[in-house]
Image: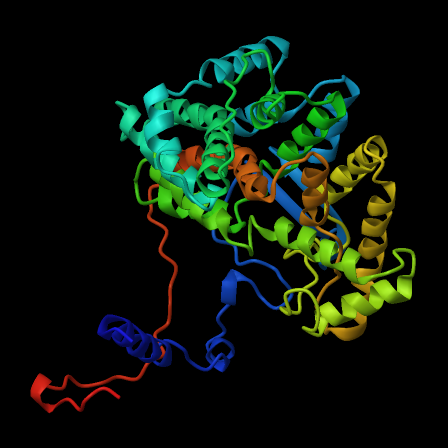
Length: 453
């Protein structure tokens, strides 16, 4: 083994040995690990008007589980979806306006907002070649973060933290994120799989969802239902309160006074993690493994046996988690999953995938029962948005490499709204407290130190 590799291996053992400590310290010092208590309730670390996530009712003075609600600027997301869907409209641009500005737009304001986003869907040819195509990545999220940081170089007012300028930057990012994601995926296909590049420019008359499908598919074709369902997925992922990891990252990094591109790149790094934005990939992969191992998709005993195997770390990735189940806040229902499920059933019928959809429904019903039988529960478990979003993306023919970037295309709206709010109401850098639990030690002169084992 080369000396450098041997040193790294030895140093790794030393670092690991000196980095861990007894988990009981968290209990002893009453630390809310992950800023949450055992029941899943989060430590209040800030205030926001942008969004709210409700999983409990306190009408009687005591807290008890309730059907989940997701509010955008105080309006229930289900009401928003019913509002634009009943008018035969797509809604992502409308809710983007709502989240950024605090009010629903009238027809004129919405039209002007859509035109502004369309006018920003441009990237210099040299930027596309140098920052995206000539620097392919095995992970589209890393390429996306790098591209966002590279946009800093195109902005003559990159460091201007005034609200008008941050809003301008936000609109540019919202409009450009689909292009950056699809082009990064095309570069990945070319570099890693030797596939020919087929790149389409965005069209000003198309919505965000329509442009994504247009740019992704070589023939640019999609059905109205496909565009509607992708738009819905963007709508329900756009905001989820200030307590999710990537939005909290946005506010923490914003509080330092840094630029918009650095903030969004940091949020992208947070979202990339499989415990956050990548969870729908795990859920879809788990269901694919289930389909291979369960011979009769209608045999509920066989399905439950598979799920128990997952819980016991015997099946799938042996992590002991049934992916797509449970949420830190929601206990009875996740409103995003409810919305996506309704339209996913429609698309499954259009694509002759009804048996697959029915299997998802059975797992949705059986998984909470299986978990309740074999795990200690502090609150209820219900299906979350990741359970159906991966299935939706699969039916839309979207590759798994773009699942998390799609999340980012949507959530950048919430990030930008929270960034503006943090600037407008902030002023203090966010610095949580950590308690040191290591022993006090004395300095040993270099000549008296024993050799490291």
